[in-house]
Length: 308
Image (cartoon, rainbow, N blue to C red):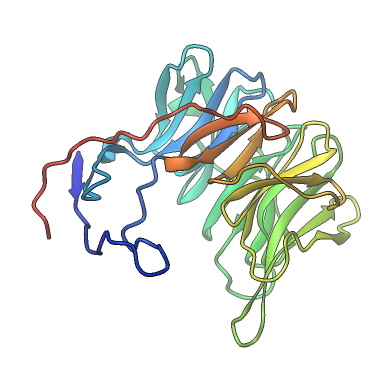
């Protein structure tokens, strides 16, 4: 099913400060996740099939929306499931995905085994599942706050039979690759609603101890998507739509992108980082920020439509 939209509602002339006020370019891809064997990427495709940068008209194919997998050697891509976010199991034989609730499914060749789809969360609004390195648990965040110990970071067993609340208001958990611990962001907001920035925390699961790693970049910064390097020595994250890395203790922050960068994930050997870059497409770079390469491309074409 095709959905066409035109939203050229703002002047394209820059103001006195040189800023052009117009629609935000449409998102094409989001949430790239590297396969454990390094040969493929999972990612979300919005279904964008055509975009006119001059008029900001877009065409989306709703049937394309969902989780896709891309072979990094051949570039071949295929849709796996209509869902919004997915992560690999540690051995690459299954995925966990978000479609209202969280589900797991085994992979069968180039598709998922529909008979294996299992719902693993009982309720709430659940996002950003991250599979533990031993394959036994899945961490995720629940954004539905209905009282103490409802929203924030949760654990569920991979089969969905056990559930445990870990931290109030935590978002986007990421497992340490070899230790029984995970990291997550929280947002500090004053009683007046003033944002005080995002802080990164680490929780030791054996003791349930939580400690602050870093307030990241301080006052007013929006930070997201923390990811441990495969050896646990560094953390990549997004801050104000740029990619940064820092030591696992929060020291030595370094900015890697300067045009646009978000939603990072490490290659299994720790040598590269995949991310969402300019034009909301998938890019890859070396772990030090060098050799940036675009992997997917926005479909920029003339779009015939009736202006609103």
